[in-house]
Length: 156
Image (cartoon, rainbow, N blue to C red; front, side, top):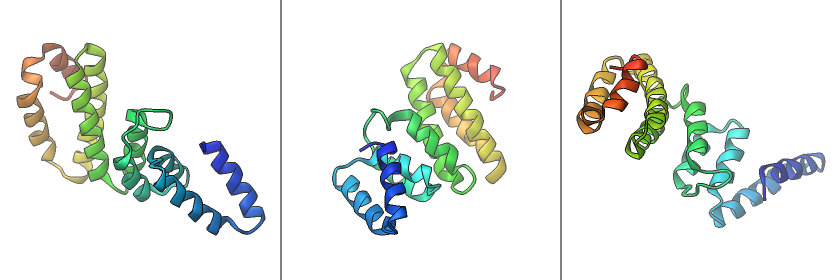
């Protein structure tokens, strides 16, 4: 099943006034088949961020609906209502990019950490300094190109 298939079935089932039962059955089947990436996309389409956060954590794929881009979409959707979850997703991805090395990855990581900083500044002022210190101690102190990208992003 694809997202467009799901939307088509929803359209037909709604016209027949059977959407609630059909939706429940589809979601159960997708859970049984471990189709968490598709479930996550469905939850995002339905603005159900809480469910998307639950299913994205179960998704181990890097396929069509999964991977880093799906997690970043969920993080973005979670920023207002679930800032801690967004911070966690952005941080994991940012650290992964740093671990992968390369200036382009460092630049992307810096962009993600700009979002992390903004979320901390908004919801937990002062916490960013501890996060940055840990990141510097763990990685940035030995990666001049990463430090350069973080400086360009005004994070250091």
